[in-house]
Length: 297
Image 1 (tube, rainbow, N blue to C red):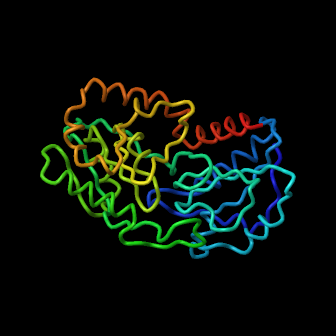
Image 2: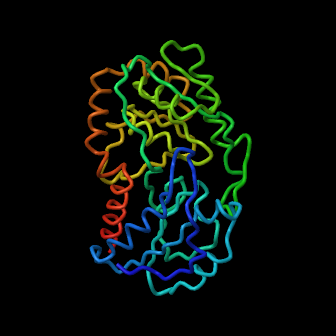
């Protein structure tokens, strides 16, 4: 596999999001993997190693002149691919011969929204049916179409979804929901005690929580509003791994979760544990991107 040459300014250093994460971030992690494993992938696709989200964090979440210059210089006769974490996707204008693997909800091919290091699994009794701890007013992108900078609509899909979730679960026994940010230790303890983790979309179409739930042994309940953004649907049956819920069905979600056979829940947890290394770790994600690129060669 060939790797495009890009200026150093197109590869900003790491960012710290979510707060428990450390360098280098999803895009740079894949970049390091690609540089060290390029000889193992026989393909005519060229990897474009721009670290989009790192750049945006450093430069105010807007299109960047350096990255735009690289995109404008791409050879129209070649095929390129890149990886982006940002919930809005790539802010710059990019050509049709660039294939985008997107973690946050925008792109051509979904990949998991991961952070490192992973959360540890726990040994607590699963004495809570389901839980959520986080910010309800997460907003969402303002307007429609391709974004050129980060925007925030207080009534966007993210806030709308989370408000509806809180309304649906209000007063339902067995569920623990808090509208606040909590210390990571408290977050982990509650997740370790929960059988289901409520994972509504956030500003973007998915959330870190979906994959954090897997790490901590919960069955994720993915609540989406404008289409599910799920990776690997060509090889994985998500209905065996998670509970999927469109916002239009959220009123019946508490009763649905209460009625799920505990045997199914245990089977889902066991399947997720088996699949984790190959699909839901940073290294597994890198190997899967290589697989998907090779299949398009």
